Image: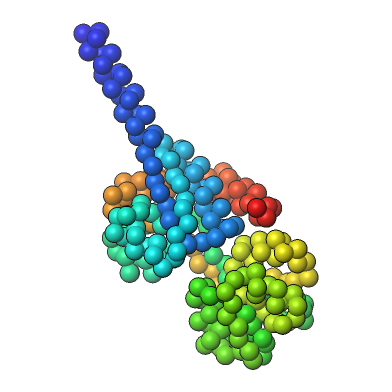
Length: 237
């Protein structure tokens, strides 16, 4: 009887260890600093539920398809309404732990950008792949429009007075400006658009949606997510 009980206890312990050894590979098309924020937040959330979460860089175009096909486990992070419409088999994790804020950066404090339409009289730059910026810029038809291959080249143009306005997200923009040592800029407020972003799981990992959501909520309520964001944004690495 004692031996049987010992086997049960050992079996339960091994099962717990196996659960703790579960891996979750999360794709992202984002670059630092946002990908770094994702990686750190999700790693800590995973620790709370015994899952080893690793964020890996995958092109935004391929990422969702690979997750939907079951090749990869999850995608971070996307707009809920769009993904639920285009990829209904994927499971959303709530709450959102990061909101994308699409903003305008200027050198001159005399330029006021409060809406997309305010771009019209200016020379404006945006980065390839940032569709909300590129599409709205083309819709508004500013005085001149530039679609650049990188945020680095766009901000060099802003710093050299070759464009009046640079469009990017707040975190990506501030991070790139700090990396380049550019101090003469203004981040326009309010944001031109704000969109909560969510983690999505494939069918094989949908059982993690609720525990991950609870872990993320704890981190949000405790201020841990905000602390991670501040730490990442204070670094240029």
